[in-house]
Length: 133
Image (cartoon, helix red, strand yellow):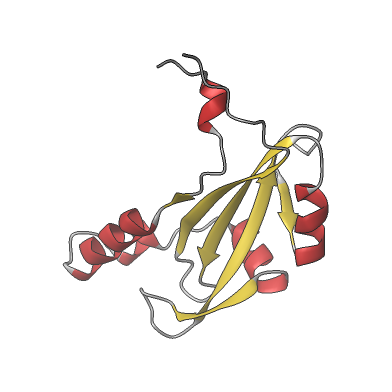
């Protein structure tokens, strides 16, 4: 069976929870310092503060702040730095586009600056999988 790289896109979501859990465990074991895991870019923290949605979880590092979820979309005819999506309606519009886009969901703590990529989601037009015999 052979396939093309484009057929890997499918409807698959890439989940990064295992990597997140490992990083948190390494911090709690004292193998990583807080400044090594709490280094979010100021623009991500600004987006989390202003347009992020509540994650209803406390930060796993400082345990004082509620995490915020920020979604960025990348793809053709979007800015090279991506587009920060602030509403479900905006995401639905992007999902209806004929382009293949990729959404990145990031959690961020506005208190200690912890951040982690949670999921990568293909959106927009998804080509049917071509299978060769």
